[in-house]
Image (cartoon, rainbow, N blue to C red; front, side, top):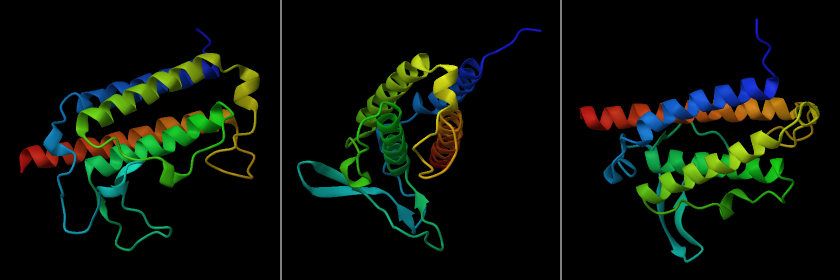
Length: 175
């Protein structure tokens, strides 16, 4: 039986997740992004400043009921948590949530997500076993979770958001 390193296993899991995500990304239309599937939604809205042309809906506490996100909001959400994860992984000062805006359209969002994927693959390629054993500064501040946990979290969070986008795409197409 072949032995697989933790990094290779996490990379395999990421690649599988990304392939499933690409299935939906390749089929999104520009009209899909701002489609509102319900009356109670989270979306991105035009901002009033050049540095924030599109502003995502947000609440500091969990809402009840939870708003249904639009595909635009979900693509922003992926870009936000992934950008901050990349900042931490590369030992850069992490950007504030408010500093990470939505690119403004569907094609721009797809480029942004694919660029984040490329940057993430570069980070994964550099990780050693010692790196994976290090304490992860994100998304669990002041915990003992490892970088390996952080990488697995990225894979899980991406899978969750990809399935949400896929479900919204399918519902809109069926509507």
